[in-house]
Image 1 (cartoon, rainbow, N blue to C red):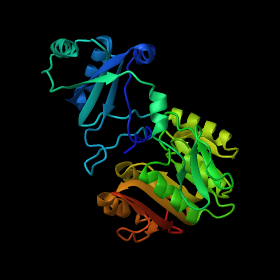
Image 2: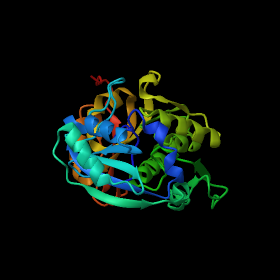
Image 3: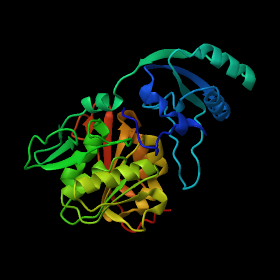
Image 4: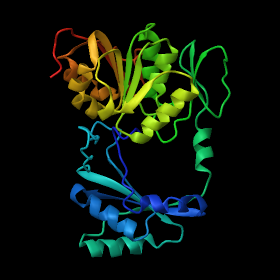
Length: 333
């Protein structure tokens, strides 16, 4: 699936990563080295490779997108994400680098066994243009379209969400986002309050505002996502309040939508219940069909969960959207 916001994944650039990013644009090609390490060795390998000349070191869950995923996210506020038990590191070097020798030297310096490596060359290209070419206007319903800023709206009279995702998750192309957008078109009523938890690019909150919602807020733990969301709201001339999770103003909402992943959604059940008004509705996405039962169980205490018929409108490929109604009077503790 598409890369999520830092609610679900993170990368480590190290102390020198930012200073070296400028090289990527001018170098003709790069060498990427991918390998797995134990959690206790993640920081040491990442820092050592940056010291040895890596342009960047990315950390990811080898099981991402499968039922075995183990999402890491920075909550409560101020608590840094931990490494996955087995973490997949990808180090990027300039073309011509003897990556194998660097890896062997680094392993010796760290006193570690040489890991099994996957190495590939990356050609230089216009990555911005290449990304843009993947996305065109997306029709969500008869009235709602998602239109990238580099495209013209196919229907000027429709509700067009003009979007530049930047570094944040949410273009409308992924099934989990499309499911949430379809849900919003059915469940946003004029003046209803809406919270987009894990807002990414702000696409869901902006769509809710376009659909006639009243007070609309979005939250993410990633500062880049919040900045992208604010810019996108401004481009769409809608009033949405975006903030990082720990700065989100108190209050509950008539509609709550969270497009994250199954594991963090299970952990966030009490927090999202506290943000949903009694009788209000919640939509949960980023869930594989095989994970649905576990997420439903996590929310039953606070919500009357809807039945999701196999192959129905709330399925898209392997993905499913879950929804429910908040039980009045059940405290979110």
